Image (cartoon, rainbow, N blue to C red; front, side):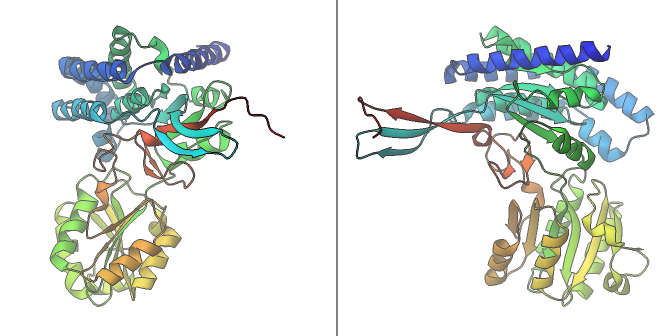
Length: 421
């Protein structure tokens, strides 16, 4: 496709999405829920077709020699599709996020002023190798009355196209605007830049992917962006930790699904428990083929592992690699996290409630945990039904973004002839 044709196609999609967003304002919760129920049914019914298209993407990715963590994010199987359908049903069960009274005041002049929740309008999602994002994003936008423009990565091209086709057919059958869900079919990178220029059509951009993608979107967009650059998450094992819990939580935080943004990338251990804790956890992690990169104090306790470099403390590995640092105090742990972390998810393991509360208060992250795995930072795990992303911003939305994060508000004022003097 020529540059001019691609630009015109994306402009048309933006205009259609804007028109669809106006029509979505008139839709009822009953109609939107009907579409969600049909989507869940169709995902189950079309499993073989979806897996077949996903295998095309996997084959291309394998031939390119992409990492096992990358393939894990890309792969869809029967279990994944079953979870995907249940996620859609969970979103359907959630209360309507629209028209909620948020604030109300009766003024001395008789004006009744109400603040109520409304859709944002048109949301563009730019994402990489996870086809499940296609369904999560479209489902949440549908429930919250927004239209959505999807731009997935080329590695999930076939998977994204079949999933979007199923979604589009479902909403059309239910009488919803057919352009309420659209996907840019072009795999050309310049397509993203055209999307980012459509400030007259698109109200919000949400990028999901690696740091380079998010930085590119943020620096080029003429439209507001909600983002997280990366997830450098920490688990801190305090001097008063239950070491049994610490082993279990640390292992889960790193190994359960290392290719996700909420997996722990740096383990901090208080010097008083390091000699007894580190050999046990490192042996367990190494048995799972996890590479350990330790500070000088860690190397003295467990020789033979890689020495951590300065850049390791700020690296999001998204793989079976963990950096380990021994710290002298809770204060040092907190300072390390606030300096090298990305304000995503961080956890403390301790039996001391006061020390735990200090950590929860002073660590400046979207999600902070006491005696729990960082892997729970997820919209579904938080009871949001699904998530459209995890924001490390502080304005409008922070942490897992569910339905509420996809709404804005407007003021409705009831008068009886009042004029301002």
